[in-house]
Length: 300
Image (cartoon, rainbow, N blue to C red; front, side):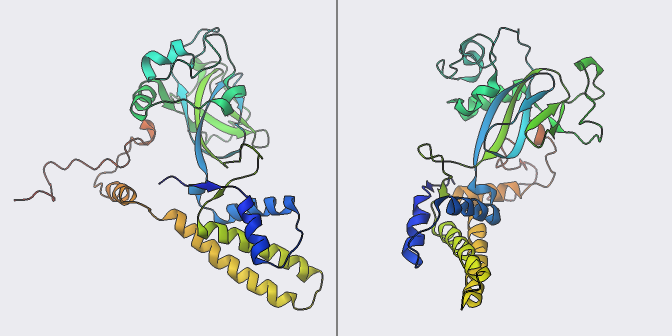
């Protein structure tokens, strides 16, 4: 179920309403909000995105605001130096992409520079067909020498599948192939387009948990300033934060709708695990297993 987000102003309003404070540092609250979301630890509070990037000389930069890599797909098609794989000419015939989606035209392009602006209006069915025929997964390298040793060309690769690793202080991806195009699925922190501040999940559990974390940080300041009664206040604030942090984390992990429950049921009802899910980019995870010979739901 999609998560609704709200502005960080709601946190400021709740702090001024619940706490006896008159002035508080805006930058401190924003940083504490980010820390609280990290402590909640629910991956569901982040939004999913896909960046289409041009790999050059075995490397490419990661997209902005990347929090976690979900999976990487390598575009198996061959392109000329002057051809853009995401141009209307290259994609409209196969993927159902609107011809106006790629603003780069049919010339050469560096997708890394435009990845934050790529929001393709692709129907799920069309993208599933396009990705299944065109993309193959790029595996995370386990070779301990991979960070420094890469092949000069595809013919010298010791394995049939492509691999990647993270280098340069976690900001750069290094691949086993020298050049090509990838689709990088990842999670990122949603931000307010007007202010650039992080957006907050619009549910009472998360909002309360963040407020309790900010309260705890304020009480820590009083504690380290040796103010009277600060010990009891800090203990109360820490207890409240731990309670609501767990509540928010559990809330986001629980199914919210009938579809969520049915998807969870179908994913758990496989007798023989489907080992090819990784190579199909985990499509149709909620598709039930076909048990024609042992149909326990058959009536009569």
